Length: 160
Image (cartoon, rainbow, N blue to C red; front, side):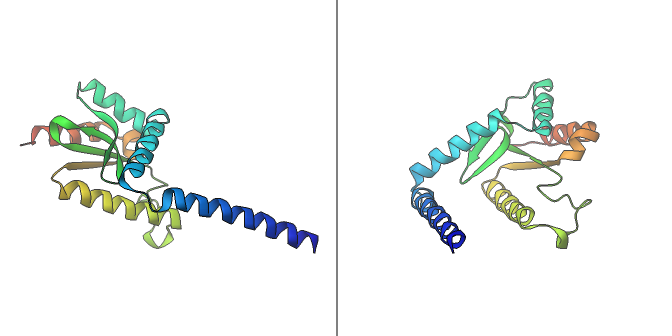
């Protein structure tokens, strides 16, 4: 009986925290939501993944002007090249469910959620007439020349 009561008290405390978080973050007004996005973007800048660092290094080597963790709407994009109106997304093989490694019906809930998020990011960027390139983690590590060529091809073909 004591264990049940203790577990119930823990659950009740958890629910209080969840309700507080939903009140604070659930129905955010645009100002608070923007601040939250800015905090998340700043955190992501500090904690770049290895593939993101490689892309950043590539962009620097090509002497391109870029921004990291650029906010557009409700989304944060990995890189933005303002001169070319181009977003670059680095997709982790596991988290984004690389199709060569994970069958669509084998994706877990997190991978499916991230895939849906990616679709929305693509639609937003393209709907607002931005370019968007996505690179898989394995391509960044194993086929950097392909990444470089794809990027240069986009830049060479860019028209305002």
